[in-house]
Amino acid sequence: MTPTQRPVKAAADELIDVSFTVNGTPVTITVAARVHLGDVLRTHLGLTGTHLGCEHGVCGMCTVLVDGDAARACLVFAVQAEGTDIVTVEGLGTQEAQHPLQQAFSHHHALQCGFCTPGFLMSSYDLLSHSPDGVDPETLPEEMSGVLCRCTGYRGILAAVSDVADAHPEGIPEPLNCAPRTLVGRAGAAPAAVAALDEAPVGDIVEEIPAELSRPTGTPTLTVEVTRQLRSPVEEVWAVMDDIDRLARCLPGAEMTADLGGDRYRGRAKVSLGPVRLAFEGLAQITERDAADHRLVLLAQGADTGGNRTAAEITLRAAATPDGSTELQADAAVFLSGRIAQFGRALAGDVSQRLFEQFADAVDTTARTGTAPDVGTGPSALAIGARALADGLRRRLATLRTVLHLGRGPRGR
Ligand code: FES
Ligand code: FES
Image (cartoon, rainbow, N blue to C red; front, side):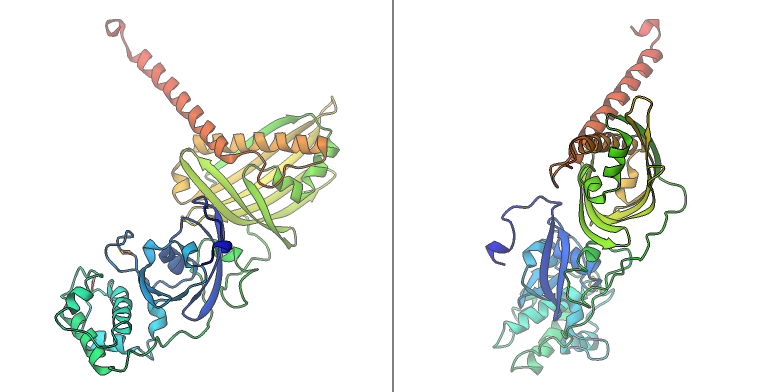
């Protein structure tokens, strides 16, 4: 990593491009700064051989090689892996062509459930590749103590490592499965992999951008119907609605990152529900554009790196009012999954309402001035979330006071 390749500081949810090599394959992904390497390997790249146990550096299950040295993938932020060469257990060998370590573990029955095995394999590879004089049976247990096995004895593991050391006094064979190949993200993986498609070398990550976004089905998590009066005349408001670049800049916390053609766009958005800050990345598509009726229908879908997913069908309609101003109306069916769906509808509804109010005000200003807010200087979604939470709490306290008050009899005073 060189100091010029990335900022010294990054917000936890800031999306950053990271390039490294995994098992011989160059990969470029876009990932939030807070995401650790273990999650990137498993979730973004589909390399689920790296197991996660404690996720705080104790169990060693997540051990991989970074530039030839063992490292706990749960303690390495993915952004720290910039420019490195990573080998996971998948790179060690294949079922058909196992590495000598894998053969020895099998021969010595050095596993029971096998959950710790990838960590032991990569840790023992690190040990043997750094022990040109072989291993000492006396110190081997301590050398291997960086990985914990919760269900089998360690004898088979130690015997396997000893065997391989004895069989290869000239040095342990290199990993056998590190030729460039296609890495396929798991189904449902966060769309950071999608974001990487343009930058990634062809064939690194296979994840299709659909020709058309599908309309969400089922019962929405919440529906939103909001109306806002704008001072601008309807034709000027429509001019903003019909210009996706300016329209996107009016959305609090949103940023359009690519025009994919076919009225499809890639973008990212930050939103806050109280203390929880979320950074979504996803796609949007305009499915109807009716200039006569000043009506726009769009589908949007996104996900963050924490497993939250959202999809929405949004209808925007501008109508002229008798005084020459405009009534802007938004109807949205919003589908949420992941922990974001655990927030109450009222709070999510509050946030949606405030998002729309700020959006509508920004559209109004843009219609009057002709200039949309600069990217990154639009309304703050974080502030919206904080205010919505505060208002929600105030309402709940007011309700509670009312209930307590009504519950008191004359003797309670
Ligand atoms: S999961 Fe990384 S050390 Fe336990
Ligand atoms: S074999 Fe089960 S944790 Fe080690």
